[in-house]
Image (cartoon, rainbow, N blue to C red; front, side, top):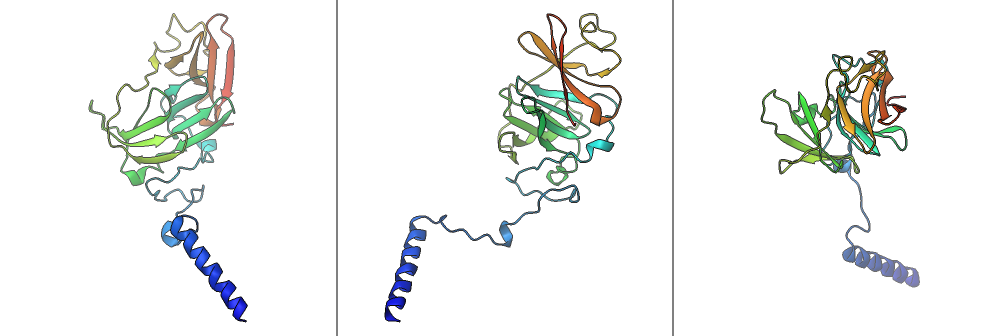
Length: 228
């Protein structure tokens, strides 16, 4: 019995010493550390600052595009960031999947009623604020695309990414030769080396939204179905 007691005390002291050297070695998670997980049945949750915004596109099936095609915020050879009635989404063209999204419902807890969103030049950060219809845009939050974490913005961004606005498709002498005018086509494009990217849909159902990469030389298209 005495040997067992000595062994027990030795293990206890060893454990205490390890925890003193590395406070994070053993972490007990209490109720204060638990947060609700986003699901289609939990739309009105409050997301603690610094927590991830989960991807949920279950509502897209019944969503209409609205008055106009969603607009580009950013695009490069890998991703497209866009804003529409769905909020903001990031689409990964390499994997053909939506990797990030925050909807208008999700950001209500941040007092963002009419969302204004822009993307940094490097395509890593989305800046978010209220669109008060004035020329003074103040971004109050920033969202890291890689980590999917939102936090308060401490400094106003400069030199944000800006897509090109073209003449309305259907009345555009320069670009109409590249468009299939049977589609509803957006008036924002992003130019790449020898191509440009734009958005289109065959109707006003959001589930039919497409990203198109069009080659300038021969007009050949590469098409991605965003929500399929």
